[in-house]
Amino acid sequence: MATARKVPLRRLVGLASLRAVSTSSVGTFPKRVKIVEVGPRDGLQNEKNIIPTPTKIKLIDMLSETGLPVIEVTSFVSPKWVPQMADHAEVLKGIQKFPGINYPVLTPNLRAFQAAVTKKMYSMGCYEVSLGDTIGVGTPGLMKAMLSAVMQEVPVAALAVHCHDTYGQALANTLMALQMGVSVVDSSVAGLGGCPFAQGASGNLATEDLVYMLAGMGIDTGVNFQKLLEAGAFICQALNRKTSSRVAQATCKL
Ligand SMILES: CC(C)(COP(=O)([O-])OP(=O)([O-])OC[C@H]1O[C@@H](n2cnc3c(N)ncnc32)[C@H](O)[C@@H]1OP(=O)([O-])[O-])[C@@H](O)C(=O)NCCC(=O)NCCSC(=O)C[C@@](C)(O)CC(=O)[O-]
Image 1: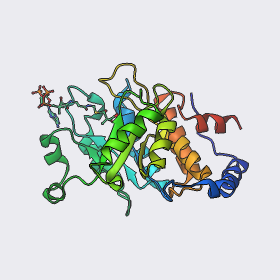
Image 2: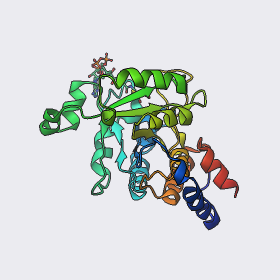
Image 3: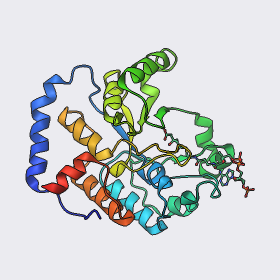
């Protein structure tokens, strides 16, 4: 079972010095990356056990404290198909809405869309397309080819990537996307996630691993690493499972 513990200061100092050393090698990467945290939705939709609503709300509030700019909180889907998300309305209502943080929900059909968002948002239309490797089989080569094709039709500023780590490629695929100018990346605290309809596919890119890499490259995310680790430890303890974040695993050993 994962336990919540604070990261020793030397770990955080190490991260800060990594940032200073590597800033000059950033090259064509974006200066700032917006992380879209999908753990409370993509992560928890795939857990066998139904997580109590107050635990979900606490996780989201903890994630809000980290400075993550976007947290996908739930999905308005059929409870018959995805019972883990049946409490969507309670979760959306119960979380603290921090100023400056967006709390989107997944709405796969118009019925859900109407239930979840206002008419005003509907008229605004789609502003961002998140390209998902749901089963996590992509490689950086495929990512490059796919993005090259998509970028001929859609400005890169409107693109985001959503990588699963089934074959251990999520961080590499994300790095390729960043190199091509994408600056919005989905990730999930503790590497939670998976799609209930994609058997064998494993979790998302872990937010902790993404933040660690970006910090090491001198790319700003605005995320408080310590608080993020605490949120990851909290939900792993609640789920009684080990984190899939390599960074969180390494940090726990210190
Ligand atoms: C796809 C639909 C919406 C089609 O919904 P449908 O067209 O109504 O047809 P259906 O036969 O599949 O479902 C019918 C039942 O769902 C109900 N229903 C229908 N819509 C809703 C709703 N919004 N809220 C609550 N209930 C709903 C509807 O009322 C009916 O209930 P019944 O009469 O049988 O009791 C439905 O099948 C569904 O909700 N399926 C689950 C979809 C889902 O959650 N998928 C997983 C998320 S996607 C994902 O994980 C991938 C992603 C995005 O993360 C990318 C990546 O990982 O790479």
